[in-house]
Image 1 (cartoon, rainbow, N blue to C red):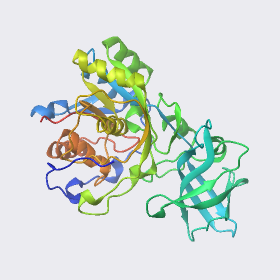
Image 2 (tube, helix red, strand yellow):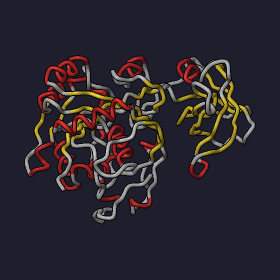
Image 3 (cartoon, rainbow, N blue to C red):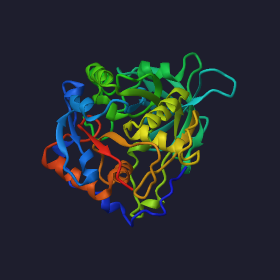
Image 4 (cartoon, rainbow, N blue to C red):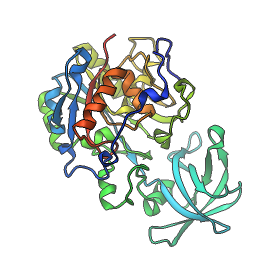
Length: 375
């Protein structure tokens, strides 16, 4: 699904670039989840200045009757190491565990993966995956190529356990490419939100990594409502934009599910005059994707589907009023999304301020609170 951008300003890829000192790329999370920093930029929507805060201050930035919507996806140990039958080493990153055939419960035994290997294996060949000690763990068969431009491989895992079980046994936490250390026990805990429920993501919904039980208790005491949805974040979140004309870029589709209870929560928030606050760009993309399926102002429709929505300046937001989000990579689709939401000039100014103030960037970094641009 694409987004309407008829009114978009003439922005190119280079307009979303900024200078980032490498030492500001967070390699580890803050000692406590809610001890990370929060750049409160709500006032920028009306010409004011951003305020430096700590994330545990978030409840005081919201009002009774507001609604926070979280993504409850769970990160799977999606990175696997192994070898082809010929002996050549390879690395696999699971993009998606495919559902079972219609009418069958649970997941199938087939997965879609990105393969990093010197020579692509043909259909029918076998791959041996190894455990963390390098011992043979299980074999998978190559079913064939799939996805846009055949970028993905479909593999059949052994049927004596679910793919999720195999990944949990021998997989590695799929840390982003800019995190330079190998995954460890701390990453298993901290590259996962406290809301993680439904397994399927290969990247964390990082804005929610800052929430802990104390923050949730403070939000409840303030009268802030909460709801959740599921969007399984794919590896496409790190896919670079290669064309200067950003309109020519396409995103990999991601599966999301919007529960009926969350539809009702959004509608109730609207009726009481509260603000809908998306926790993370994945939550925003799911809500705004659902809004594209109904007339403006109509209630959202619950259910599960895929989205490839690409939100860039000129997008007409219909649901989300506030956004909690981390700081994103230069020239990325997520930079374009936040620029669409809060205004391009405001976001670029905000990023310059964050660099000067030595905020920590990307998945394990700090966060900001944005208000939707007027108009």
